[in-house]
Amino acid sequence: VELNTLPAMLQAANLYVLNWTIYDYYQKDVDPDEYLIYLRHGIRFIEWFNEPLNRSRIEELIEDLKEDQ
Image: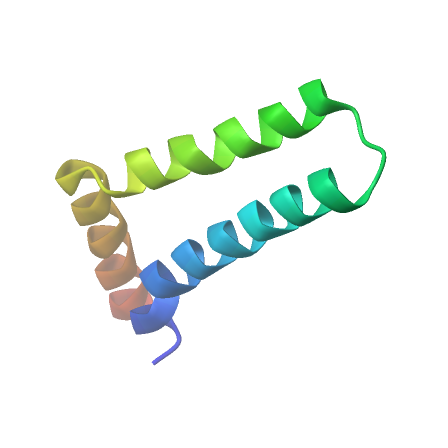
């Protein structure tokens, strides 16, 4: 069951980090360049994750892990 939720959990974790990045940026005195790195990383992950080939690779990895159990 846990492996089946892995793709959704990866997306949720990325959204959590993006939310933290934006929240901290507006609530604290932070280095904008540092937080731009965090923001770009999160956006690049979304773009990467939404590529069908990358998504299918993750799904294949999950299936391999299930077989090993």
